[in-house]
Each structure stands twice: as C-alpha cells, then as structure tokens.
Amino acid sequence: MTPTTVLAAAFPDQVDSDALTQNLLYILSSTAIILALLGLILIDSGLVRRQNVLSTSVQKLVGFTIGTLAFMVGGFALWNYQYYVALGVEGSLVQAFKDWWFGGALLRNYAHNIDPAVAPGVGNSQIFFAFLALYGGFVCALLHTSASERIRSAPYYVICAVVGGVLYPVLLWLTWGSTSPLTNAGLHDFVGAYTSYIFAGIFGLVLTIRLRPRVGLFPKPGQQTTWAPNSIPLAALGIVVLLFAAPLIVMGCGFIVPGEAFYGVSMTTSGLGLVYANVIISMVGGGVVGAVIAHSTRNPTHALLGPLAGYVANTTGFDVFQPWETLLVSATGPLVVLVVYNFVNRRGIDDAKVFPLACATIVGGLLVGLLAWGTPTGGYFGLDGAYGFQHAQITLWWQLVGVVVTVAVAALSAFALVSLLGTVMKMRVDEDDEVAGIDRIGWNPAAKSVDAAPQVGTSS
Image (cartoon, rainbow, N blue to C red; front, side, top):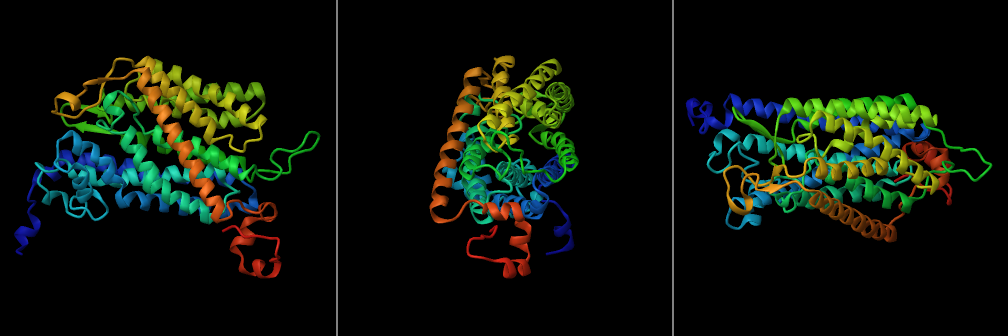
C-alpha cells in the first residue's frame, strides 16, 4: 500500500467539515454522560453514612461500566433494527446485528472507508454507539441510587448486566428513535426519559421495597433517627454537576441536517438554540418552585431536588415546547415530587429521590401530549407510507401508552429478576455491617480477619 492510498479518503463526504462538526457535538454530548455519573457519585457520597462512602462509590462506578459494556454487545444493533425495517433492508434483524454488534462491519471500519450510499453519516452512528452505551450505564448508576448503602455488590452487578444488555436495549428499541414501534405511531420522547428516569424509578421502587429501608432512617414514634448523611453540601455539589452535564447530553438527542434544520430524535422539527434555552428555563423554573416548597415546609430537600424536578419533567418535550410551556411544566415537577416524597416517607419506603423524580417525568410526558398535541413526528427522511417523514402526530394517548409500557416492563422485570436473585444469593448488606461501616468490613482485609464472626456478613 502506497502512502497516497493511506492518506486519501475513499469517501471524503464521510469526513468533510459538516460531518466532523457533527462528530464533535456528539462526542461532547456522549462524554457529558460520564460527567453526569460523577454527579450521581457525589450525590450518593453526600447522602449515605460516612462509613459507607467508598463502597457506595465503587459499586456505582463498577455498575456503570458493566451496564455500558453489556449494551455494547448487541444493544446498539437492536436499536438500529428499527431503521433497517423502515428502510426495507432484507433480513433486517440479522443485518442490523451483522453491522452493529460489538464486532460489526460498520463499527470496526473507519468512516472514510464506508460508502455513504450504504451508511450515510456513519461516523455519527459510531459515536452514537458510545452515547447509547454510556446512557445505559447511567441508567444502572441511577438504579443504584435507589438502593445505595443496602444492596450487595454481586446482585447489583448482575442487575446491571441484565439491564444494560437486555432490558434497556429492548425498551430503547420500543420507545426511542424516529421509527421505533411506538414513536412511529406518535409517542414522543426527546431525551430518552422513558428508558432512563421512568424505568429506573419503577425498577428501583421494586428493588428498594425488597431491600427494606436503611437502619434508623424511619424510627418508631417517639424515637429519633439514628441515620445521618455524610455531607449535604457534597450532595448539593453533585446536583450542580448533574445540572452542568444535562444540557450537553440533551444536545445529542437529535439529527442535524446542515443548511436545513435540527430535528429531534423523533423527527420533530426543532432548533438547538431553543432546545438549550428550554433546558435552562426548566432548571430555573423548577429551582424557584422547589425553593418555595423548601422554605414553606422547612425541608431543604425540595430546594435541592427542585431544579432536577423541573428538568426531568421537561425531558420528553424540550424540542417541541415553547419557553412559556417549558416554564409551566417545570413548575409541576417540584409539586409532583412533593406529593410523592411525602407518600413514600409516610409508608417507610426508602427512595425519596429517584421514584419521585420518575413520577415528575411521567406527568411531564403526559403534558407533552396535551401541549404539543398534533405536532408532526415519526418516520424518516425521504420515506413515504408507514415510515414517511413526520407522518404521525403527538397525542396524549400515545404518551400514555408509552408510560404504561415502560412501567409494565420495569415493574415486571424488576419483580422477576429481584425474586430470582433473592433465591440464589443474599441481596441486602447485613444491618450490623451497614451501621458499623461497609467500607471497613468489605475493603479492609485486616478488619475482616480480626472482626469476622459467624453472624457478620460482608458487603459483596
């Protein structure tokens, strides 16, 4: 091979300035998911006992990597299957896996060596492989937040492998992407809220009920709680990191057509500038309402969750909302969180973060169906008929169908998986270890050898 053939691009359109600009945007968006993981680690590090911070952080990081790797095996191929069907590719499922599983033909070759007639914008797709895989890992880390300080490492890692490798890809294929079965009918989800916040909230609820609350969190009447968080300011820092990462992640949830427009992933006509403005408005609106609730109830939790509640409530609709609609929906987020937060605490359910935020996401998703009713969506560029460009419409009914399907998949899979794991391994950290310190028991060989006793377990 001569130097000339090494340097020359076989298909230069795949690496022209437009393509590389889009590549950089998607790379930035994908990398921001790792920043969001840092936010979750900081939040949990602040909200668990000081003696359990190390184990909590390690579990979340390892679970993230397991979920990400599990998705990489075949998850992206399954997600791309929807487009192969829409484009009429023969043997769609088999071909999608040949092209996009971990060793697929379109994943192991350079973009400039792949004919755009076969795979246009393949560089973006290769980056999107990483984007969706990292997002799957983020879902696993979010699940851990529901069960932190209680769940043992082994069952959690198994859950991450199943979620990242099976449940998340299936739900992603059903609900996200312009030609997915539900989106092509009219379901709208811009940021992937159904596959992340709603799924994690429902799955996490089943898991946390199975694990029982942390020791001392819900004292009996007349008693004071013996549980104390490590550092509320550290948790607040984690929320700020999440808020910083969120707009960058959102920017990757769509198609850029140079010289034409930005389209949301559901194929809705939108614009990056308005999307970014809506993200900031959602955080500010939720933050103000959360602050009012916090001062009224004298509970700072709502001031911390307010911006997140405003954000997640809008995640399904950033691309189709006008700013005033974003502000309206962001105001509902903290109110929903307040109601659900009080509900779970009255019933001794140890998840006052992920599940309440999931409920705010559900309400926001339904409001998309009302406020954006009739907005053209679905299909793919240049197609006609059942997969024609923007042939479907957003409606409340399809938003509701998406919620029902997601809740059913999350609840049933969680119940089945948690029940199965509970029969073959111990799920929960021993209460004595939780109070004494999982870090000391699980990560200090000297402490394990000196203090070990038949009634004391380990954290893994």
